[in-house]
Each structure stands twice: as C-alpha cells, then as structure tokens.
Amino acid sequence: MAIDWSSIFGEIHERTSPATSEALIAILAPFTEAEIASQRIDPRKWSLPAEPLPEDLVAFLCWSDGATWRTGSREFSCFGCKEIREYMLAYEFPEYLPGAIPLGLDGGGIFCALDLRAGSNSSLYAAGSGNLDWNDVCYLAPTFTDFCRGTSRIGEEYFRYLGQNPRRA
Image (cartoon, rainbow, N blue to C red; front, side, top):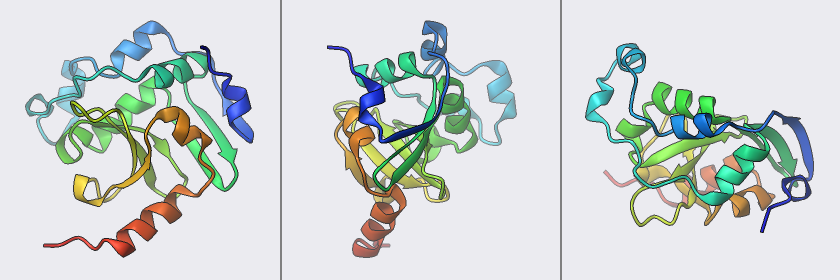
C-alpha cells in the first residue's frame, strides 16, 4: 500500500523532487577515493551498514528527496540522499555510531538516526550532533513512518532522556 506522505505531516515547508534510484544506491555505496581523501580518519576502516534501507524511507525519498515539515511540536528537516551521505561522512557516523545513518536534524543540533545494525528492525533514535555514541541515544520510533507521525520535539525528548539516564563511566 502506498503512503500518502502529504497527509502525515501537519505542515510541509519544503519539498524537493523525488530521489533517483542511483541516489538511493549511493547512500550506502562503498567510499569513493575523493571521500576517502577528504576524511581526517581513514574511512576504509569503517563498515557501512549492510542492512537495506527500510521500504518506508525509500518510499519517502521517492516522494521527496528531502523535506522540512512540522507536525504538532515536531519540526524536522529530513535530508535527501546526497545529504544523508554527506552528513554520515562529515560527522563520522561509521566511527562513532556504527550501523546508523543520519536522516536529518531538528534545528537544534539533534540528529534523527536510523539504526541499520543487523537485527535492529530499523528503529529511529535521537543523537546529539556533538555526542554520537550508542550509549547516549534516545529511542524515538520503531519505523520511519511512525517517526514522521510523531508530534513531540525531538530535542526535548533527547535532553529529558539524558537527564534521566546519566552516562556511567
């Protein structure tokens, strides 16, 4: 069944053209020589997620290769395929949050990260852009569609979680 993405969001502030199949494949493609050369840490030591992108995320990207929306108090800027790849490398997700890819930002420096580790069921988590660590992520939703239907502020959920669960040394 096709998802009517326009009906999920309270407001759509920006929407782009649909992603191409090549752009979707490029998200988890092997690193290029240019990407390797641009990193301060050798990315050839990193493992990219092996799990495929969830069908609902692919459907969304085929509807709009990135978008900014608001539903209730939740405001979110979802990356397009190229930006997912760029942020994954720029923030060194494979080094600090292995198995995850960034899907966008909440406007306050909090990523929504998709867990693509084997057996993870592709859940979504809030992760601070300056604190990418599996010990410090906040569960948001079981699927991308459920995340999109959420109405609470991502940053509030994230900081409440960190306040209730201080990291143990």
